[in-house]
Amino acid sequence: MSASAVSTTTVVKHFRQILLWPLQLIPSSRDTRIQKHWQWLEQADSPWAEIDDEFSSDPTQFQERHYNEFITFLPYVQRFLYGEGGARAGYGESPVRVFRRRDIAQVRLTYNPKEPPAVFDIAHIDLYFFYDLDIIILTVEIYAHNLTLAQAQDTLYRFGRAYPPYWEKDGQGGRCLHRAEWLAATGEVLAVSDYEKREKYLSFVCQNRLPCISAHWEYLLQPLVLHSSEQQGALRFRQIEYHRMPLMVYLALEDIHQLTRGDYVRLGLVTEPGDSATLPFSSGYLENFEARYCYDRHREDREGLDWIDTRTICCGHAFILVGNHKDQFFRDPETGLLGQFRHQFFLLFLIAHMHKAALLMFSDRLEVAISGLDLQEVNSVKQFKRVIRHTMEIFLRFTQRYWFEEISNQMQIKDLFRMCTTHLETKQMFLDVRQAVHDMHQYLDSDSQRRQANTLMRLTVVTIFGMIGTIATGLLGMNIFDFTDNDKWPWLQRLVIFLIVFLPTTLLVLYTIMQSKVLSDFLEALPNERLHLKEKLGVLLKVWREKPKAP
Image (cartoon, helix red, strand yellow):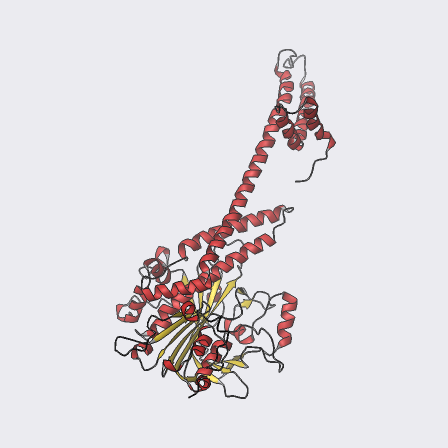
């Protein structure tokens, strides 16, 4: 068999793909400190229903798979994922809420109109909400049996695209499926992709400066609506990453050794199908492919019951697990690698992309706050301060509740999480966002200190120059002139005398406040021995020479 024929003759006995699509939610109210976005799904007439904790409090329902999944993670990750003691409120509640829709049973994918479509069963369609974070992650898990390797590669490459990057000469969306259809259990078509509607995408970007999404993905997210669209909906979202959705893939082959290096590269870097005897990129670029992307802890042709020949490939955007279908442990859906792929590995990948989406959300929020700042508008400055302080509060809670540099002490999970986060560069993103939030907060503190110092300086100037008025008005309290004699000075005359003193003193104080900046310069110049008397008086004369400038 030639290497070039491998991609069309190699059979994938079991294919499973999980798409993860992080999205940013738009707060429905500026006055609410913590948004509980999932409440809109509970109130609205929607196909989504919340999933109760899989870890049932009934011991008879608690399976070994649940136990293996739980003990995989460190205690603080366990509390994040599962809560404590089955509590649904208070300290022990998990901050993760999951909603699932069950009305879609299959998806039919047409890669080429000249070839018959492939039909995949739907395992799950879930929405993950995170308490105190304005993000969600849509997950779609599909599976099929007995696909060709080319079909598997095409599904990886084309299925998870929110919109087309360009259009072919025949009008079809470039690098997209020819057609994607959501099917009900009865076979009814619920929604169809519209990648070929070029004018729709062009006009939307022209009007909104934002991309829209294909009709079948739009249907899947209902009642959530795109923030920039004209559709009505209380729960609105915007895209936060690239249009290609992160993905996980499980491939159980008849013989893993049928795959060439070119096949592994195409799978691991999620490229379109090609000649198995060739590489999709230059050999120089792929020189360190195995060392950089492949986790070959159990990749070796070795016989034995205690050995399973597998390869895991992770580039951050994609997580690929490849093994032999004949190995019982590899295809075991409960305690084998298939079960680990759908649960432990999935949670690993979910946490890594939740981190990235949250950090992008924080970065976007800071950018919006800065772009809306107008130093000449008092309300704009106040709004900027509120947004920055609110963002810092959320970031501090995110750091304590969600940020994990390690999630497990099990070597395989530990290594794969580190590999995934390294390619996603989330650690550097975290440091950058933390520095940006710190810089913003430091600016607010320094601005507040500057305003306080300016106010204190003005009060000091008023106090010093007010001493003159105080001494002058003190004349009324001295015995030189007796204005306390009721017979000699009636109350009307005493009131007139009081106003004669009060009004000029008030005007003097107000004028001193207006000129406090220049007067403070004069007070600073007075003790300066380097300045001549003429220069010091010149500083004072600026009060009348220069017009006061607006702050």
